Length: 115
Image (cartoon, rainbow, N blue to C red; front, side):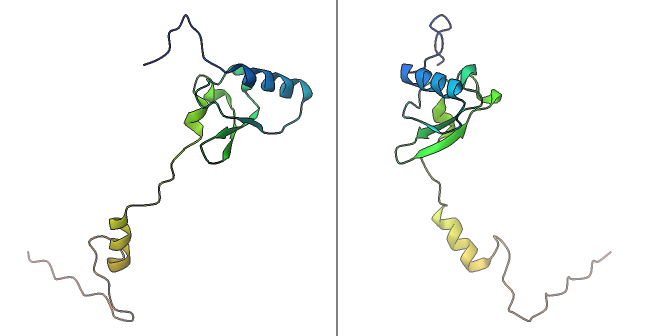
């Protein structure tokens, strides 16, 4: 459920302070933040934030399309490896549903169509 309009977007105060000092100084260094719940404001466009995902800070360069979203949306917390059954199928057959041919052997000829 979305936040009420009359409340306005939620942003931690320390992020606003850090963003203002970075804009005024003109330096382009990463601003480390831990607040994944904060909303991206138009003042943040053009800045790079290091959003903490529980293990490390992931660099997020803010563009105009990101305004209104949360910082946590751009810093994934889980890494998907693969399903174990998919890995086994690729090792044994090469491709799902296809038989592996012996090296140097030609492919079997297709049966002639009756008609």
